[in-house]
Image (cartoon, rainbow, N blue to C red; front, side):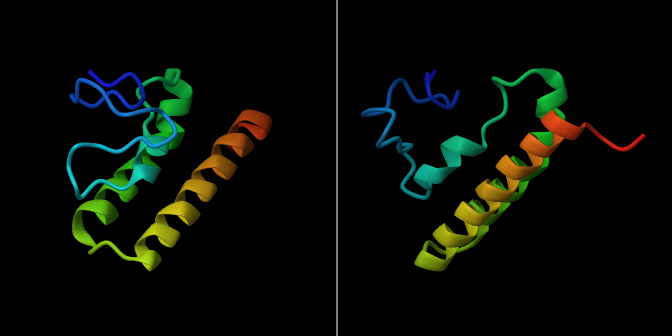
Length: 90
């Protein structure tokens, strides 16, 4: 199992150049994983991972796809920080 993202690959070249052996995999996808998070953060992060996987699996690779995934990652990070600092509505 990969130590960086939890996928079934035995290893990746290094953590900075993390790429799955599947040529369809975007390097940004490693940052959408949530298995390592505590349960309350998994719940916040999972929808972003699901959306990223759907985009990655269905949209042809391009600069715009990468930009969109990067913006989705930025949104995920913002929402996780908002959750950590403010919590959820009652």
